[in-house]
Image (tube, rainbow, N blue to C red):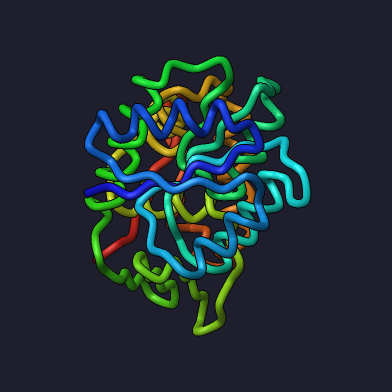
Length: 223
């Protein structure tokens, strides 16, 4: 059974989400702010966290950073804020989806299912390309035996490129698959993250090639 933690300072929203979670066959806990959520996450294993941005004591963005330091659990960010900057920040911090208020509880439960199943399909594996090592499960990337710090979205982008090695991937595909199906960004988002990813990979930036007029490809000779 999928177990959800809904974190929101509005009791009515927590109640509605909890009711629909039960109807969907999910188990649901509640927290009224980020600090309470952190206490629960330290004690309980959750499959998905639904997290509001605007909360007292500890806001959603700060809570995401703290949560990711404890456990790599899927997060759906829930907010009345629709600014592209907020969505970009959320995705860069590692959230899996972003839902704006007012929202459909049925759609939210559908997104919970998608996010949960997507994580279950993530392969438990490790990649090695010359001096580049990528531990998918541990979400660790090393360059010549030195760990490099990627943002969660840079890591997701790198793994997606590796999983589709030697395939030319358009920016549309990357936006859809890495930034999620409901994210409406532009090509600059992809290009900026590719640029930062290449910088972090140092000499192994050569593996990420530009396909003129299309997008990008992860390509390694004789691998």
